[in-house]
Length: 47
Image 1: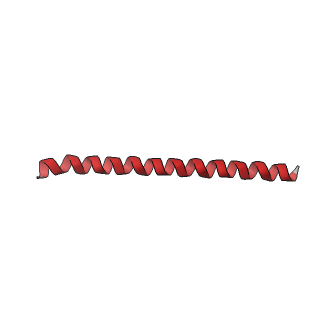
Image 2: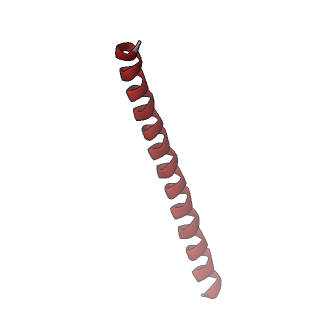
Image 3: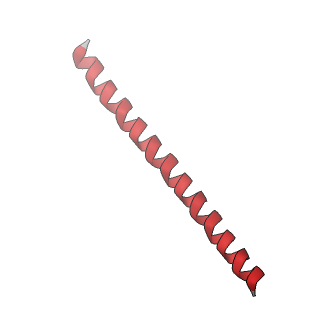
């Protein structure tokens, strides 16, 4: 049980970490694009 359970647990934690990295990447990209558009529109409004 331990020999079969350990690699599976390791794989699961690896997948979890990859999923977390993906979520963080998507969140960062969305935040960045939103901030970019916000700044762009604000400057356009000022000009």
